Length: 84
Length: 153
Image (tube, each protein chain N blue to C red):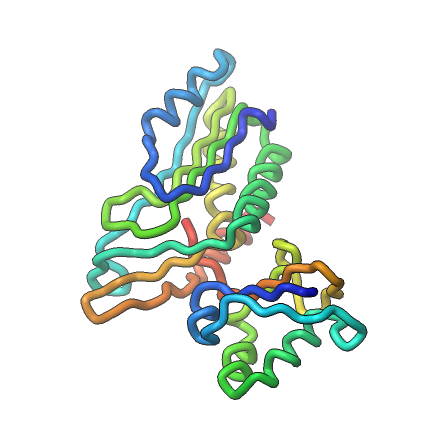
């Protein structure tokens, strides 16, 4: 399984904290996950389409949509950070 | 020097004086301790802020902060780094973050302290949500924070 997490404004806008997908050849990278998520509805297309406002991490390290994903991976989507 | 470095994410307030005292007395070769304290303001973008809620990404937060601390340790000759960041609900005047750096002389401590807070602002997965009299809102990332980080590259 590939675990997909959402944080902060994204979690609220999508009303989703976590999803799980079966790993496999149809989900080779994060771009494929984004494509799959956008099939969930217009709200998902709009929120995930605003690329300036969406960061992505793979196994808790910042990455981008081209990163390959494998079974057991943890992917997270969140807005630009505002700590400190 | 790893045992001299500590990262803490916590809901509870922290005692700034106690942290500084612990750092400065850890080693008689320490000649300087520089500390940055970030605290909550009661106004932002012209609006009154009653409370603030800080969310983070448990696991990634610690990893990101550790990477920043390790890089500071590589760039400067330091004798201890502490990063304490609060999460949960905060009110005005509450301390949010403490970055404290010990070294033999002030120059390295000042630079490393500024480096750590600049990187924390753009790389550590924390998000602030403000509660105002008109409702709540997520805080937007500031362009100035990215510029502050870029100075170090």
